[in-house]
Length: 447
Image (cartoon, rainbow, N blue to C red; front, side):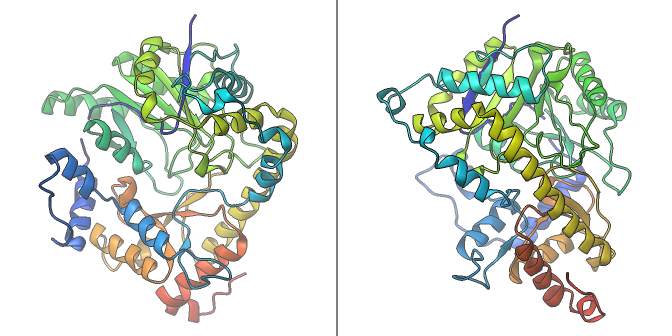
């Protein structure tokens, strides 16, 4: 059996499908609040060029404002606290100590020259060994298989840009329940919904995307659930794109994450493609290295043709390979300490949410909590949700609102907890002292 993989600076997926009514409402809300202001079309660009130039989602809008006014403890203490971008800011000391070791400071001519666009062989080999080990694959994964649409909602919002800006592929949204205690994957409801709509609208559906652990719900699906999902994809000849970029962020010792790569066999290995990267599990969002593992050699060859657009510097590839092959540092130092810090930060934030009577999905994974702020909406609408999001931002706290993830119910927000506790404390102070002063004055004490 042959496998394939490659390394890329920007892993993206391919699918074909459109949208749920809640998403349409949320997009209309965004357009309403923005109004007709903004730059017009450029005569120097094509229609698609203008579409890309003018595109700006809620997540991008918030991050741009944050970039212009970042909080810094000493240089900009009144800047924006970012509790919206899913970054792990808890382990820079561990990474700094490891990344300045002598084995990282290596240069030879091959690292400064063009290489295989899938990534240097030495890096793909280390990625394959790493995934074999941490995904508990029953057989060694092959380095030649590494390359670096239905979608349940809510989902990581930038997937829309990943697909739309490259290929104008549409996403067809299949809503999941996100009530506290009711969040699950409804395979057979999905099947009926999707193919009923496909028959009605004449859509050609090519693939389905699922994140495990989920973004933004932090739900962890069992291997049994994932195999059921993959069997659904096989029955309908769909490519299944499985994003496991948060697989090592599970911080409860009693909970085990099981990668689909740990299965003895996959229902349709030629249409099953697994994505992973350094940004979440290793707190290295700036490294910009992602991988795609698939047994479909044709797909790997096709993706390799695009590799020149996503090349990674040879020196960066060397550093990441050195990091991944340091099994002792990963297993004995970094992962245990990272999980300990994530657990403590999660406990702090959820304790504050509980004391304020804010419901949330309690899941022991990822870098964020999916919280229900509906009681703070004056009315149940996406316009009101966006207004609340802007109110947070005006008061120097960046969160991510549910409509940025195509949530069909207004009022849900993703709150990132993977930051230093004094930043979380300050962010909450800004929120509830200035945005919700009545609750603050009623006696809530920040710990």
